[in-house]
Amino acid sequence: MCNIKPSLFLALLFSMQLSHAASLNLDLPENSTNPTIQANILTIQVALDRVQRENPSIAEMMARAEAMSAIPSQVGSLPDPMLNFNMLNMPIDSFNLDQEAMTLLQFGISQQIPYPGKLALKEKIASFQVDAANSTVDELRLHLNRDVKTLWWRLFYLERSLEVIELNKTLLRQFISIAQTKYKVGQGLQQDVLLAQLELSKLIDRNIQLISMQKQESARLNALLNQATGNVINLPELSAINIELSPLKTASTLFDLAKINRPALAQQQLHIDAANARKELAERDLLPDFNIGAAYGFRQGDMPNGDNRSDLFSLKIGINMPLFAESKQKMAISQRHSEVKQQQYALQDKWLSIQAELTSIIADYERAEQQVSLFETGIVPQAQQTVASMLAGYQVNKVDFLNLVQAQITLYNYQTNLWQTISEAKSAQARLIAIVGEENIYE
Image (cartoon, rainbow, N blue to C red; front, side, top):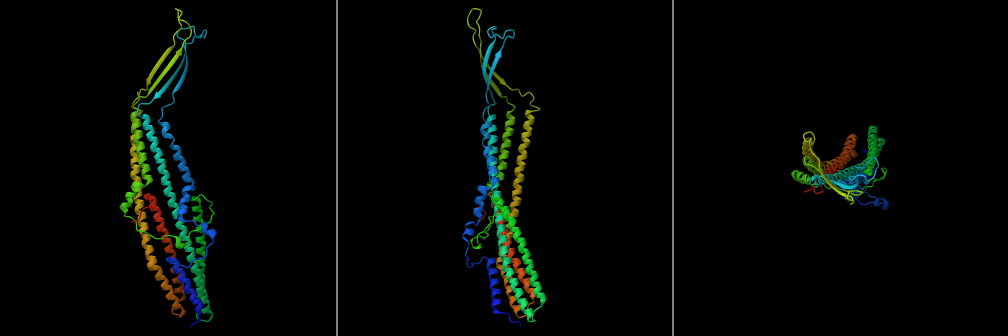
């Protein structure tokens, strides 16, 4: 039997223990950390705070809502009055102001007054639009928070996977060393060395892929946070990250919360309210608007009896006449009625879409929750025990080297699957919060 150094064997077991601890979040001795890196650690809360402050999409939508808030008072105000100056009955033969008795210089003012209630309806419509714009801002906030959390947990998975790869690279190098030692003393096969080297190369290739993915996801997160896309993102240490998966509230409760809190539904309801107000305004357009004016005319010259010509005062009241109501106002009413139905159907469609998406996300979360539990309590520990048993058997030539390497690769796959599933569960949590509209989604 080959005489393998005990120190090499112990080192291999210690590496496996490290891998086990990393996969199950066990307490490990803390390494010394760089204060500069610690100061730049990006927690989820820091990322969420920054995206709300710095993301240009939020700033754009808030500016739009602020601009729209100035509209209601404008449309609810009377039209500007008209100030008039008229020269009436001027004789063209002399252009003399005192030649004719009816020649006068007239100053007047007129005001258009919509039928009572029309301006109030216009102001109400604009107010609904302002509230809808604010709901759009709230909806965008939820979407940005969801995207930030999803990218953050994606980076979390990639970082953990890279750690697992490093541990497994160390193990495979030790496997190669063991296989080479056994081959040198005639107890092993060259194909064992080549096989281990191939698997090591595959891990190196996977490492390259994950690093590329990490850079891509970091760039996307940096873009959301309005910072340089090449900025290095440092996540907290594993011990400082909450990876607990809490049970969700019942589906019916989550539906009720979404119906109450989701800004998109509130926004659609505001569109319905605005459409109803427009329909009412169209109905009032059958009623006339008024135009009221007053004028004062100055006359020059004397009357035949020698008295000064008196000035003249004029008053006018006008109304518009809806003579073409059948083809104009009544058609507008029909149009607005159809728009109300359109918005009502849109709300119904939005709610059905939210219900379907919510049901799907709940299923994703519950599946991931069950898988994480299975990985942590069953599959990963069992795979680790299998590797340890095969390693012991390989030492006494009772286990084929190929089976040992495959067992270790299987363990690696299960460990990375564990972190990926945790990331998927946390991403599902983020999507649930976004679709429900509040953080309190747990029992």
